[in-house]
Image 1 (tube, helix red, strand yellow):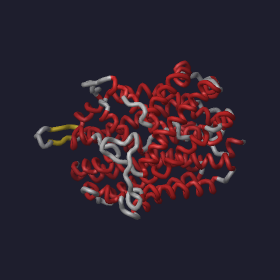
Image 2: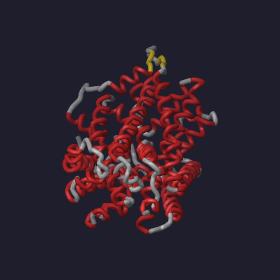
Image 3: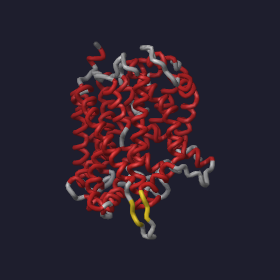
Amino acid sequence: MEEKKRGSFGGSIGFVLAAAGSAVGLGNIWRFPALAAKDGGGLFLVIYLVLAVTFGFTLLLTEVAIGRKTRQSPLTAYGKLNKKCGWIGPFACAVPFIIMPYYCVIGGWVLKYFITFLTGQGEAATEAGFFGGFITAQYEPIIFTVIFLLICAVIIFAGVGKGIERVSKIIMPVLLVLVVGISIYSLTLKNTNSSGETVTGMDGLKVYLVPDLEGLTFSKFMTTVMDALGQLFYSISVAMGIMVTYGSYVGDDTNMVKSVNQIEIFDTVVAFLAGVMIIPAVYVFAGVEGMQAGPSLMFVALPKVFAAMGPIGPFIGAGFFLMVLFAAVTSAMSILEAVVSSIIDRFKWKRRSATIIESLMALALAVVVCLGYNEWYFETKLPNTPEGGSAQILDFFDYISNNVLMPIVAITTCIMIGWVLKPQTVIDEVTKNGERLGRKNLFIVMVKFIAPVLLFTLLLMAVGILKF
């Protein structure tokens, strides 16, 4: 009765699609291709895949199991498992609370570009200063942020089954079709560059898939490993409280091992296809240099690529930004749900009140982020700021949540399960219906030894203590 009262997914398909929707977000769309381009193409892919089936599997399984076992969201789940570990809960809840405001701001940017291409104004997006002019405007970014946040709030307001699950079942299949369609089209592209050389999408695919081992040193290899590890946080939504929350809505009869495997596969396939979509297209029209643009890859480089495609460019652009918008919404609604669910479990508020209060707090902070590009603009340096670059309010929020708090939450979760409660706690939960955990020994070794070491190394790099 308790499970129904707090809401639950109608079945394993709803859970898998919702969890995959959370995992498939903006980080997959722009961060994965940019890192792959920077870190030797196929080398990054191989390392990422190895980490996904070891490190990623371990953290994903752990968090979903914590959620289902406790029937609680992150703020209260850790304390219910072990009172001495209850302090982890506020840290785990702080991550989505900090991420939500700036994620909505970026979601607003995506919405702006989708409408721009949908209304046939895609050519304007290629003009110098279009992106900078938009994000530094006083009111327009706030308006788009409000619209994006409102979309997410309405979904969460509707609840787990009628909101999250229903929307995920509609959006995720459409998103997958768009990703596959644009990926195939990207491979058919060709262009003659200024040197008279004809470059094709298949050439770009080789850059993406074939490992570039030229000049590979131990330092470069470890940097690639840490980049892939950091990307996994974005890709599978761990250490954000999201998978604990979604796990708490999973029925006891759900085959959790099978579901986690499906989430892994879905997310990895979309992350890989994001590279197939973007890298060949950008390589054809902008070369290797154009692939390393980071976030501006999506808002500056890609609009120029769509313009270079000719008459079909605006349609491809609209389809691309619709796909990105879907990915942003499914991720943002899961981030919002992690906080709303925590408020409900901790303070016993109704979903309506919790959603309204958290949305208003997120909006207030989102406005601060928007103002960070105009009225409250400043430049500062963070340990992860690129050479010659500067950080603003959005970058500060991102650094605290993703580079500091997330590794701390992941490390302490591994210590709690690996050493305080023992790995059998998770193993018993995921196999309680007689399921077989095929990677049982791998899980034990990862959660006790390898994952904490990797995570601690990542944290030391994030705060600037360790460099390779």
